[in-house]
Length: 232
Ligand code: XBP
Ligand code: MG
Image 1 (tube, rainbow, N blue to C red):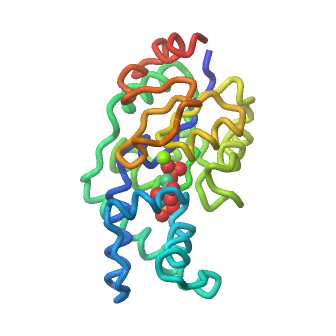
Image 2 (image 1 turned 45 degrees about the vertical axis):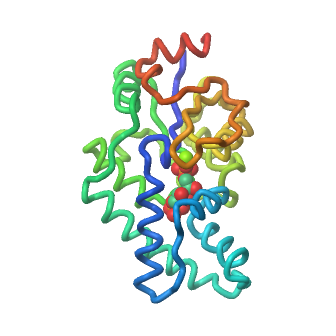
């Protein structure tokens, strides 16, 4: 019996990365920065988890600038981007991925606890929950572990370990739901079994280590199906 499901957010609950990319580009333009992240560049930049870390990587790799000299400015740019992203999500253009709503409601009904373990920022999680579930994230998820709460972001296991600590459960009683290689590696390093359905931007990632690999989450839209497919 699965006692808790730990959900990744971006690319898993919803296909959010195009909206993140738009928010980044809007903030860059508003600051007069001639940085424009195209979809193909963003696919490359997504190898780096975390918006602030992504900007730093971009500065070093494409602007040949030492990001250590931009620490405060990166944080300020990222705060502006987060405000823009929340506004885009609140505008209501985001939908949950197939199977997520059914799995969340079936798990809740069966007393399985729900958690978030995401690299993204807490305001983004709150905005998505209200926009897509119509309920505060803190009411729907027993535990929320967000990117800025841990020292190392995915593929490090920190955010999954934090979620498990807050749940007070062993990894063996829980399942992680992910979309990307970074997320899969983080979940496995935390000792969790992990279900993966690649998203638009993570398609092509090496996710062979997944305990269950799916095209989307509809086959596990019910707890019984999830447990059967994981042979639990
Ligand atoms: C995906 C990420 C995040 C988002 C952008 O997180 O790596 O950095 O791309 O969000 P997840 P921030 O673990 O949910 O897949 O700008 O807030 O980092
Ligand atoms: Mg993800």
